[in-house]
Length: 282
Image 1 (cartoon, rainbow, N blue to C red):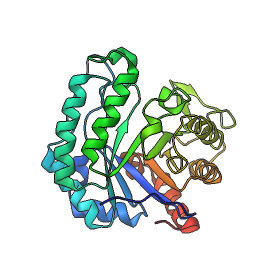
Image 2 (image 1 turned 90 degrees about the vertical axis):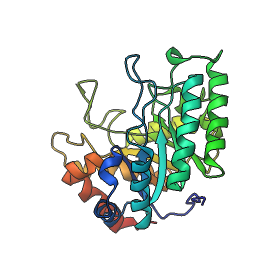
Image 3 (image 1 turned 120 degrees about the vertical axis):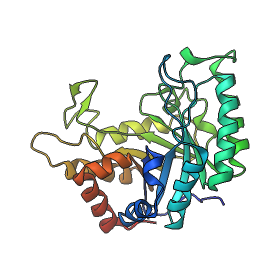
Image 4 (image 1 turned 180 degrees about the horizontal axis):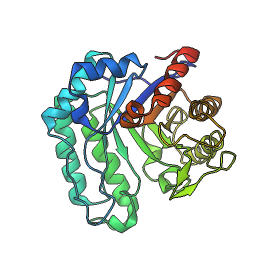
């Protein structure tokens, strides 16, 4: 049931699947695996990062998500169930209910919590502090996982990817999102800036190492499969530079955001195929 962490130089490649409905048939799973992707992070609920968004809503019925998981697992793809909660007593209760049902129905290999704009003090409800909310989240994830791997992903400059992290020290795998993209907040990102390919990965992992997460948890990273077009550079090169930097930092597990971008960007598929050819994958 447990999916062991890779501790070798072999690269494990995966992608977050943002739409479970797209992954319910065998053809999708075969296409996913044929590209060399062996892990799928199924996004289970809608991100709730604004006050107007639904507090908790599954992206698809439990049976649909389970069907997608079954199809992927049949092709040898490990399935991770990813959720986005707020630091909210009611949300964590709903998370436990829904994720327990999903784990039972899908027999997933791991569960993952996404702490981004959804996991902020402004959404604190029913807990006196973020510390108590974080402790409750960790306890909930452990109950739901029933011994499966527990993962956390977050963005580079979030609290959970810093020395102030509260959840990250207690997970089995940390996937900081080192997304070096050509534009942020409607502003161009220079190739040779701190946020450009190569540098962004170093900055991200330097911060990840301050979280208190275990050495085995610091072997993974999230990379971008979108907005990779810089003047005078090929997008394939941008993705290759980011991956090379991650590998130089000891990363053995890479997850791309996201399947939608991989299928819509031919350069992303070329870059992933090149990575598979050069390094081999597990």
